[in-house]
Image (cartoon, rainbow over all chains, first blue to last red; front, top):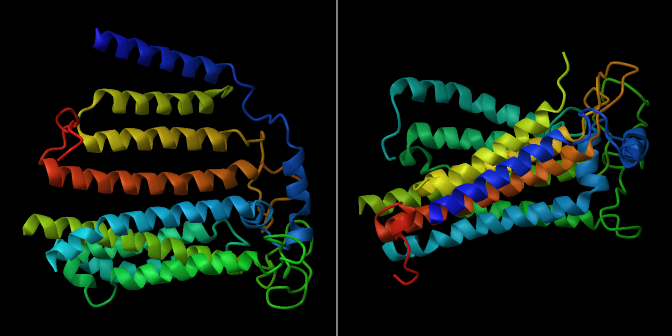
Length: 91
Length: 157
Length: 116
């Protein structure tokens, strides 16, 4: 009974994913590109850099990069704290 | 993990390790001109450290790297990235004050369109690349070292 | 020959395979691999959203002239997503090490008690 329920749920989710993938907009024609057209046109004037992706990551959307740096810092501190109790038990 | 791998792997690692470090620093440094940046270059340098750990075992890095030094460097990188956000606080948080200004990384005006790349431009972008690159490479190296040595020491005891 | 919506279908297939792996496998490491597969599918979907037909990379160094560029914002957000996936996988694997040390086994059906 439980196995049949798990199989039905997995097939339902799989069918939903494939139906959503085939009914998306055509590949290669983005719908709303106004913000990215502004970024591409003004990167060399405002940021004075050649790489538009780095300019978006560090200048136009710098606050998201701050959040990501915090997540990476929390993960490293978490792993080091988990293994610290082990090292203190041994020494 | 205290033994390492065969002599072929160790010889190739001795040859490749310096080249991998130089390539990683190149990717971090030229992040505002070519594809790359802080995160990508930091991952390349961290994989060079992991190669050294796998090929030589725990005895190969005993004198060179330890987890405390790496954790301190990672905290310095995170604080430097946060401090660079406060440089242009007169206008906005994360404002690029140094671009087109003539001081450090202010540089000459970029020619528009396709060009050969000017290293002296970009404002706070190269400095942020260095801060994030230092953070990523020391953070991942510290995690790899602690997981390998911490896990293996418990099994042999 | 037209590609059609093939990149979106591949991303959906990766997510479906990842969900199958962490529903039906018993080993803890295979569960972590399933979570990593789901994250890979989502990252591929994000990058495929920002493509323009016959576009070049959004970089001005030695760029060929008179061509459109693809959108740079989905690539920037995919960078963030990859780093967060790395953080999740590191914490999951260290928990797997601790579970193996405490119970002696990596079978998910045997690690049920919450008190050691």
